[in-house]
Image 1 (tube, rainbow, N blue to C red):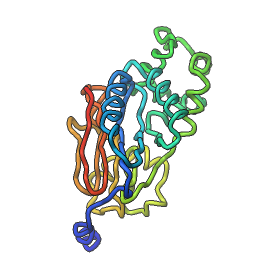
Image 2: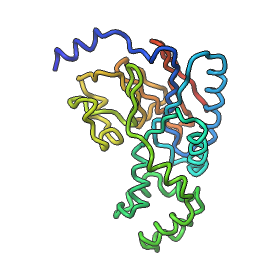
Image 3: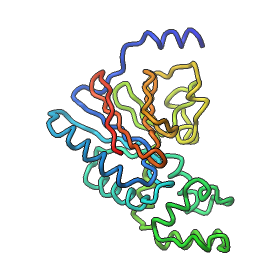
Length: 248
């Protein structure tokens, strides 16, 4: 383990693909206002770039904020006009889908942001305690557009460009990158953050909020707490350079 860690400390700097600028956007959490502002910043930033650009959304588009419906509507529309954009699945999207599919028997999703998301779609939640789970799911399915649900079901678990791997939460360090489980990619935290084992790729992720973006060389965390801190962040990767854009 120590030998692998020492070897990783000597590796050459990570690079994005030649001629490509990558924009990886952190956890949005129902803040369409911040998303709109950050996308404007990105458009200005890439306006004079002569190479190709690619947007990568790291998941957790919903919950906590009050504009989840607007966020999914914006991202769905973006997916139709930009076929190069990548949309990853976060643990909150995973939880929402489980709820809508009737698999969340204990209604755990509602306890960490699902109520706000349902409210954004006009689902009445004041009588939620008296409603059966099946009735609540039916109510939600009647108000959430089918294209939003289809969009959620098409979300990817990871993406790799150049020396960077993009995931929502992180990776299990003692497993090969091509053998990661969906649960780890969407939900892992401390086992990833506190490990001394360094992956073969630089991991770009969200999921764990910090007041400012984190760049430790081997991983880049861009969840800056849009749902509670009012800051939405994107990391810009071009060649060996890394920089950040923010809205909020």
